[in-house]
Length: 524
Image 1 (tube, one colour):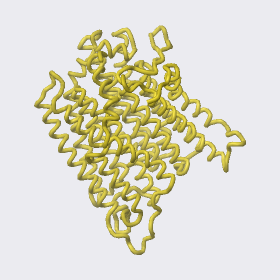
Image 2 (cartoon, rainbow, N blue to C red):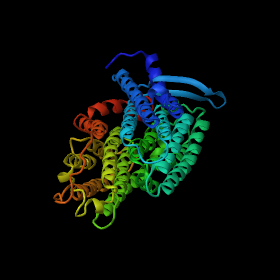
Image 3 (cartoon, rainbow, N blue to C red):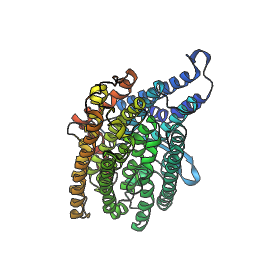
């Protein structure tokens, strides 16, 4: 990699977090006369592409300058006292756990901005759209970069408002109801989470996540840990989303514009599972130990429930919406992530982190593809797409059909693609859980999860058969196949899905030392 001084690394991380906010303010200002292009709308969309592109470049440089020989060490750290009375610090840093999530967030936001430049969702002014997209990016990047519990909570909440407006103003049918459901669920979960975070901070005397992780719960009694894990876990479980706290997700995805769905699935859901790994596991290990079997039980219930819901939507005559189906599939995929975390083993937690990244790449691609189908047909209804004059994508738009089939088989966990490793490692971790956890119970959970993988394969293959296959009707013209801007926005996701599948050590080499240190109480 490249040798970058610590001060430059500190600047890069701070820049990545703050620059989108500055870009959001600039997006709301009038465009300078020389930069307007054909119209002010085009200028502001180009501004969005430029800002997110610069942040992506900064994230890649940060990743290249990262000391890959010591991924368990917090790097690019900034620690400035902010609220002395509460001992709250502006504490930033990145390690092998947060670095892949930072780069994924920067990449997906850039691809969404690029896609929106050519295919702006119907709705109010592009100025507000670009500003909200950048505020959303800043909040998400901050969530993965901050190392103070109070700052984590503020960043965690910061993403709610822009996502609410993206759904409510640029969404499809039922967008107001879906946006309200999204904000109410997540806000209620966050209130409970804040109480848990304050309890930890006040009882231990610090909100510093590194100090708390190094202490490994020694400064907190078991009863305090149990209460803290319950409170913090509820807030994180809503965002993940864990069954049965998931019911806001299908409505939000169905109503959201394409880029809203991509960011919701690819980035926002990761904030919940990241919180479990960064906060709950190292800071309150005894409390986590108490709740781990229950977390695993809800996780496997989500895997089965999500798969059965998808099968029902995919069935002929059920008027299933393809966007809704992929939303329910996320409930199942995030179930594997939670199962890995609940095992409290390095293998399981590494699998969870790998599955997080794989889900972001693959489901982001799936939502892009469904958005493209909806643009061409005016609907994502499966019965319409599979009707007599329906999609038959292999015949009418072969590249689009081939890419949809690729994304589907990647999502079902085909070996050689990114989706396989995370789910397999999560089940391996659960097969031999941490000391003190019931092995027979976890073997049962693994068996149920394995059955869930078969159901996942079933509904995704049904979708591919119904949407992609069938002869091209003689009277139907050929569809517009993949456009240049679509190719530009989607090809990085395809390439990374293949790369992570064929060379998992790229990710696991980063996460494993950091996870080992986290679970060992800050000792490498």
